[in-house]
Image (cartoon, rainbow, N blue to C red; front, side, top):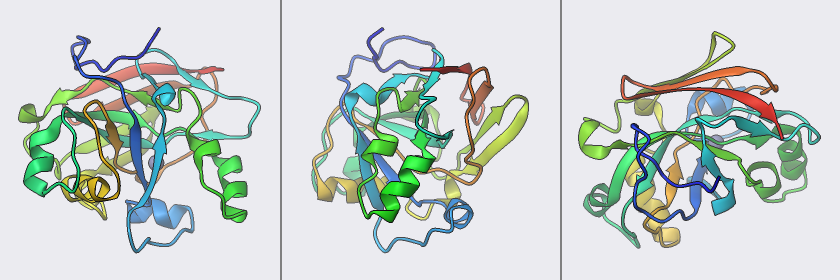
Length: 222
Ligand code: ZN
C-alpha cells in the first residue's frame, strides 16, 4: 500500500510525501549509551521517500543484515517549504507532530562508522521510517514539553522528553533549512533518547506521545 501522511484519526493529510530529514546524537543519554561524543553541529542524515511507511501496519525488519534497532523519535510534518528560515517561519510551516521509528541496522552502522562512511546503508533502507498519524500543531501546547515512550512486549524500552534535546525542535529545523531546502510534506525525525535495542519478529510494540496518540503494532520479518 503506498504511504501517505495521516492524522491521528487515520484520515489522509493532503500533502505530498517527500524526504525524511533526521538528526543523530540529540539526547545526551543516548550519546552515552553509544559511547559517542556530542557533535559540534547537529549530525544530519536523510531517508528517502521509500523509507516511509505507516507504523500501524506492521514494522518490517530485515533479518539477514544483523540486528535492527528501535529508535523512537518525535516526528514533525511540514506543510510548506523552508529555506534559511527564522524560528517564526518554522513554526508557521509545521503541520503537526507524531512519532517515527528511525530503524537502524546497528552492526552495519558500526562498520560504516569504522570506515568513515555515511550511514544510509544502515538507516535509509525501504520501510526504515515507520510513522504514526500526526497531531495538528494547534493541539500540542509546547513542542519542548512532550513525553514519548516505546513499550516492547509489555516492557518500557524508551521513555523520552523533548525538553532534553540538545537541539530543540524549532531551532533545529531552522538550522536544517540553512543547509538545504525543506519542502512541503517533508518529515523531520528529531533524535532518539536512550533505550535502543534489537527488534525481533513477533515483538509487540506500543508507541505513545503524551495523551495525543498511541500506536499498537507488531514486528514482522521482511
Ligand atoms: Zn535516530
